[in-house]
Length: 149
Image 1 (cartoon, rainbow, N blue to C red):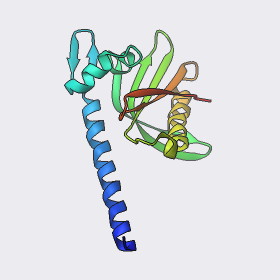
Image 2 (image 1 turned 120 degrees about the vertical axis):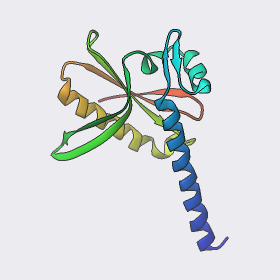
Image 3 (image 1 turned 90 degrees about the horizontal axis):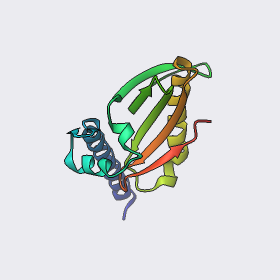
Image 4 (image 1 turned 90 degrees about the vertical axis):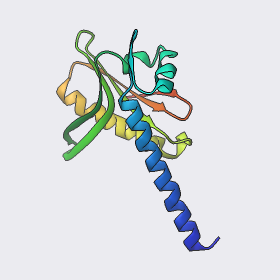
């Protein structure tokens, strides 16, 4: 394969991955599961209903595509959280980010840093709340806990 073919193939792979990620985010944004009240993509709804660990992230009180901004270490940061649950009664916050990568190791450090940034921004607003971060690996629907330290 020539160098040009290699570059073009890489661009097509990246374009496909980006489009796939956009489609998955759009579908998951519409998912809501709260007892008998459900909406969104039926495949995702069924997969979430089968998992007690995912139900709180997609139920009542969950919000999608939540914008957040602030300063971290003297630099302005503006982000959008895929899914956020703030429970004032329990003083906890759940942060969920969807990832469509098949290889977890390739970008894991960057993804952890991203979720920790969310935590830092939220901590400035909710200093007494416990913040928990997660990655939902969409390819196998596994949930990974991200230490917020």
